[in-house]
Image 1 (cartoon, one colour):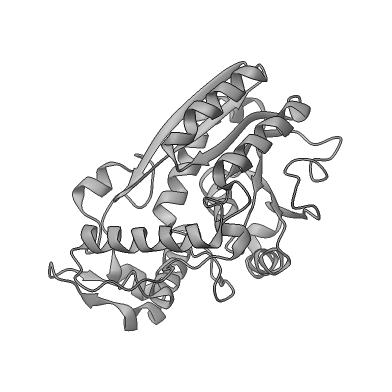
Image 2 (cartoon, helix red, strand yellow):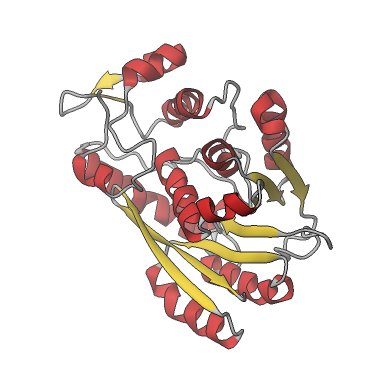
Length: 306
């Protein structure tokens, strides 16, 4: 096996994560030959790709999804987020631990998950339905992203009965207008917009680029959004803090329809205000699950009223 992840990065992934080992480029290029043109030897003498090249990252994702998740047809529009799959898989596996998947599955054969901001890539439903047989309802406010996710579902038979999409017409709302009267979800999940403006997003991209440069021992810095991203994916008024604040406020009205509300929190400095608000709305239980991949650290904050 060969790849671009070091031992420290590997050890931080969830033990059930299929991407614990180094990237197996021999197997990846076998199932997805298009990846071959992007694979080169890095400074450590290992096979890798340029993580500064959006086309290379997209090709790697297509190969990973085909090899490990039986997704034969996956594509995203140019400029949309191309997610790091090992990190996204970690959210799914930690969520399974949170909701005690094995205990629940003995009682009911179907666990339903609500994905707020399913994105053009449809990545969480792909991983969650394959790994645990969950059914997903994905919510999206961007028409292009919605259509892209729908195309992925339509093009892959294994997703057709497991993923439903709902369009959110009001960008100011999160759960309202998309959770129906008779819905019940074991959990909701979300990767909220991180930044508060386009300028802040670009500065964040420069920091990410420098972080990758340092982590991968790469000399040249290219100031680009290496994973892409549209406005609604990267920023919103008030940034991550405001988005999660609104999510918590709305969650009160759906306490009986969602068992666990969860969200990624990238900025550790946002945690005190989140905890204070959750106490104010009388959340019965609050859990924080730390995650780390490479030079990036984040966490899942989860709360329930039950």
